[in-house]
Image 1: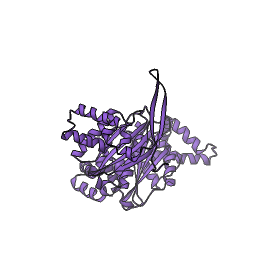
Image 2 (image 1 turned 180 degrees about the vertical axis):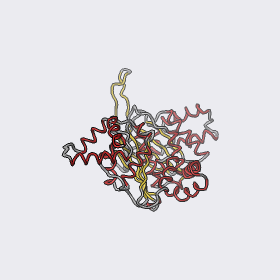
Image 3 (image 1 turned 90 degrees about the vertical axis):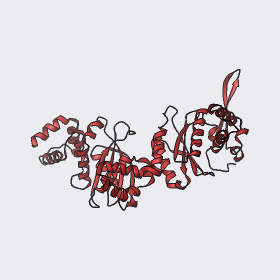
Image 4 (image 1 turned 45 degrees about the vertical axis):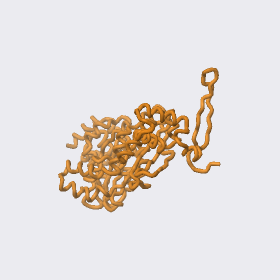
Length: 403
């Protein structure tokens, strides 16, 4: 009978015949609460690891440091300590001992012995632990690893820190994410994100305006937004959002993150008046030649200060992200004009990306195509745009005739 809803534990035992492994025995079930709470010294595997740690650190088991070591080992989940390598056990114990002396937010990643599971340990001050923050850190790990959280647990204990543990499947050959960078992101989210954003704003707009913007905006972002957004990017978002004059204005920012794959770019849209419906945004991006992969909306101040949409986009196979990013301001202006209704929304907008045209030449080509249709040309819009996109030099020569 399963009495608690958690993933089953597997114990894999090699079957050795004549000195060679002839098979394995797999035992599935759940550790009992008694087994999980058994003294470390009475669990052979943990006892051996504790003795080895005493030797490695040079601790006297009866001294203060030795007792602190035993407390650290006892505070960690037993079901995971038997599923990680001695080196990972050492890392976990060192972190637990460090936090006992100096409580602070911290994150540590550990792989299972067979490398197929990633365990994320996050220590947070108990007063800073809530459902929103737990979900935000889980979303961060899902974004970084690319797989879903299969299970999580929270242990509060008697100290000032709470321990959150996440489990994810990961490819055996996949590298372990950068634990130090993730630890920094968690620390910024809990205690340092707002000051870091203000520091970035000071560098860009001066101390006086930075202070006003920080007071108005920085505290209005959700934990999930802070977790996935670095301070420099948060400062840029604040500047973009604050530059909108009325609820109907829409801002656009084109950029790329280090974690984005080949041919992938990101576009953020900004609006004060409310969410931008996906049914409005996706056709615009597709007419520019993007493929929309995902979208993440963020309400600032519960929507009172505006909305930010983070789109992950993919370019066509023949496109290069470098030249497009180099023309970022021109492309942002073209997208913004379409979103605001100042420019038409059709496939001719692909020429901004793939033929290197500004907005005005695209207007000329659009008018030229319509005049041709009136003269009886049978070529469709998509056919003409595709031909112009595939021959950018000829397109530029054609545009020169309009000048």
